[in-house]
Image (cartoon, rainbow, N blue to C red; front, side, top):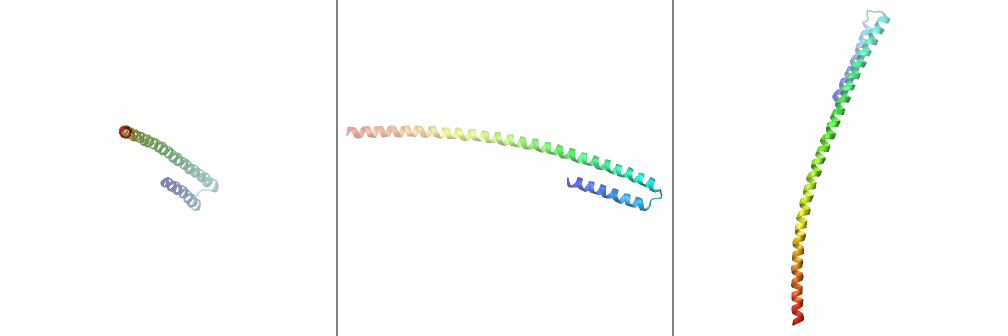
Amino acid sequence: MANTGSTLLALITGAAIGAAVGMLYAPDSGDVTREKLSKDAKKAQEKFNKKYEEATSNLTTKAKKAKIDFETRLDETLSSASYKADEILAAMESKLEDLRKQNAKLQQKDINISGNKEVI
């Protein structure tokens, strides 16, 4: 974008300098010189509009591409996070099942120990 701005500034500056030099060295009458200046101004305006449209089009294209890239990366990240979350949940469920089994064994031992104390 900075390059486009510099190009446009150079174009406008060149047109202004050209118009000033043209008036100083104009061999034609005032009416002819004004007509030439008007044509040159219109050409400069057309070039400016063309450059503006190109810059706008380029920015729009780049913005659309950046949006698509961002959405793709976001989808990949969310998908990866989802798989990792599933793996973590599966590991936690496995650990919970192991803890339940250990708890059941400990409760069984407590019942056996409590049962033996009552017998004694």
